[in-house]
Image (spheres, rainbow, N blue to C red):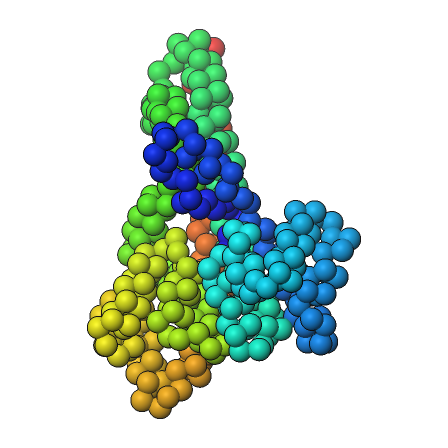
Length: 377
């Protein structure tokens, strides 16, 4: 689930022309709710349903006085739809504000008579997702800011300060040599290249932000070069998918549908088409679940092995739960290791950039002293 926008395909083509199709698309474009708001919502609904309050009243009570007026209006619409005879999951789906995984689990909870558990597990699922996103942001954001500031300081020193030192040396008619000459050459190169480097970095940043293909390509290259990063990302992806699949399957959704719906939790990753393909093969080709995972996905061998055990012992739900817990634990360990390594790399880069600023700016000043004294003799 994300905080982006969703757009239905209704009205994507109109026989009367393209203008009605565009306006129809704009009308169906809606903003999804923040994960924090959804965590509070699902926890509140779960507690009220557990206290034997019916679904309609639970939606009404939670929406009353809610600061988020859009969420309150959405809950009121869901309440009215359910009172008119619409199923709870279809009422949630009609709003276009909830993803397929959420709808699937609500449907499973409604069909199995455990809607309170479904809402509670949705809240727990979102809480875990938020935690790991916060950890990743914490591990990457601050180092990125530090490195950017130090690179900026290096560029300023090479573009503004070093040329002044070079000019002072020219005034006393002394030719730079040794480290001083090297520092001036670095400054000359920096003055020529820094605009191109900055523009390239900005363009790359925009591409990474806007293009999912670019993000996946960079991630794939980084994963192929850095084993720890590969282990961390694969653990997070598999934890996310397996925990979602376990929630769905344990609440009565069949395996193939559980796989297809759970794949939406990793929709922006290469794992998404692999899982969807494996679900199709499992459902239509009759291959065992473990074989579908083995042949058509890039999941770890441990997942394939435990699915095979689950099929033989009719305990797939238990194996999914065990795997989800295992990968959650591994993800936390890899996250700690990744943060420590990243902090060391940032420290090393910071020391290198500070040394570069010092050598490029102040070393020529120290070395030009004797030359200026020679020129005055």
